[in-house]
Length: 236
Figure (cartoon, rainbow, N blue to C red):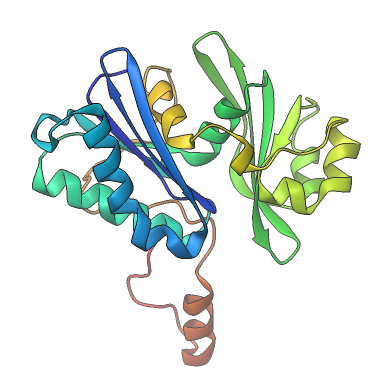
């Protein structure tokens, strides 16, 4: 774990912030997607105060990548970008799904975030020591198509998508799904994953990088349908 780094994750219904100072991690979370905009900055201020870490001494910021909640991702990323603009430090991007898999504690974990329309944003990761391997990269699936992407059977599945399609998940894993709220704050796992190889998405310019949304926002789809052409410069 890298000291004096701050982590932010807002890809799910549970927003979390964590900071690593010395050999300890201070983390806080708030549940409810509609509260993300109001709660994320107070959470940042709270963990920095509890860790007694002045903002000027921040060493870097890691933010949870998508796919996930469109609005949630934009809120977390806006805060992360604002912090590095005010205090120029490195910005690192790690998938929120990988953080959820790490927090779940299994050796092989499937992560399913609810994407509505009968689909999930899904991924699968395998852990061993301080290494992580992406078995199935984050993408849009049904539970059946996610299962069909690998012969490997996960120890468990986590996320609101796994909970929504509980029967399919139990038939696949042999265990009940685990909700994000039952896990330790995902932001704390983001900090741990900083030390793992192969966890980061390359960033060319941290000022303009955008989350991996997984698919266009509903508003974009409606605009393009009504105008009969792609939306100019849509978010990624």
